[in-house]
Image (cartoon, rainbow, N blue to C red; front, side, top):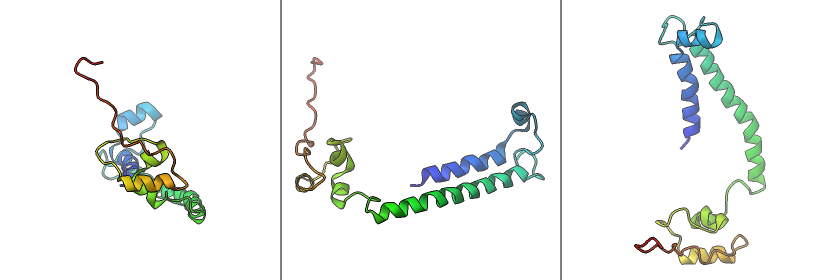
Length: 135
């Protein structure tokens, strides 16, 4: 889910829509162009915010696409399918984040036998619960 992308765009566009002229004057000493909802005949700030969104998308694409291509060429872009099946909490951190969805014993054994495994045999054990006295 691209929440950072969508919410980042909304955060930038919202400035062009809701920028309060009083607060803008107080903060920046100028309120020549303010939010579109405060003056429907002046969309200058809103257009500038759209241009900013396009610039950020272009900048991030120009910087990150080559990086991701290199990672993919070296086989470092994704984890192994076995690690994905077992879960990264188990394969990288040797423990669970949640006990509700545990991997199968055969998947754990396959991970343990792989070059990434080692030390994941006992990760399925739930922590002991305290008794009623809190001891």
